[in-house]
Image 1 (tube, rainbow, N blue to C red):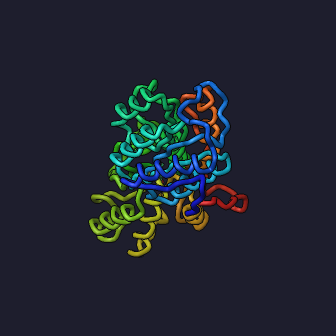
Image 2 (tube, rainbow, N blue to C red; image 1 turned 90 degrees about the vertical axis):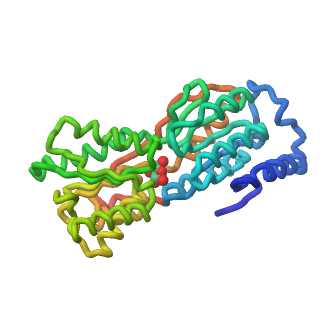
Image 3 (cartoon, rainbow, N blue to C red; image 1 turned 180 degrees about the vertical axis):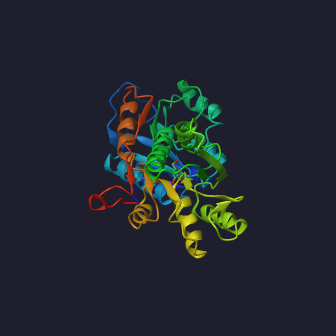
Length: 345
Ligand code: AHR
């Protein structure tokens, strides 16, 4: 990953030390304006803005691209980024956000790994007068505690996945459709949204049955593990407890690639099973064009530029929208693949 004077990558205990170093750096480079004395409504030149950002980790190619997008956009807009990698732990995120408050950054942004448990730290940020932007995943908290949310609409992604399934099954004249779900991190808003959105489309049609769902934590290794277990129990057939698996709905590409690894390793054909994934990273789009997947719903990780715009607006005292959803598309087996552009992640 690229290091520069504008981006600082840190984790855990080193955060306070880095914050002190950043403070010295600002003094040394001759920026004598006191970042703590500014008026909230005054237009602040972007090179003076400091954004504290807590990322959840690097569990997927999607996440890596999401991190790059934020770092690149901060550099492009001359925003000083203090970046913390929480290594998939909420407690690390809470520590990082508290450190950002101590340092009195201009704006805090974070990707909440799970939905609950943010009220106290958000109240602390509010008391310190530091606006907070929630990024990528949503939270369950009093909306007055944060300025706005920027990210995907997990519920709509789930609906898009189910709508593809329903249309395909109508065409194929399938009668009973047994679905296995590879779910994302428990208690994360995206896993909940993708599960609920999917169910909202199929719930009134008794032909659709989710016969098994397991938390694969958005990880390729877990996707493989879950499929390995299913194949061992069904003695190498795509079946669950005696029922044929007609469709697999996976909440992200990493788990999908993992389950494909398992099928390949055990030489189990999946031609008659509809496989739907979410994210649209290059490897899953390649799998779609090779006929290994039927549908990939995009989850757009490139939110850095919009985030920096929101940071600048909010730092100059303007309100930002409470919810900003990223634009997302759906890729299916019916597309003209020659029109696909490289995904970049
Ligand atoms: O929160 C977004 C999800 O998290 C993406 O779908 C997944 O790949 C990532 O790990």
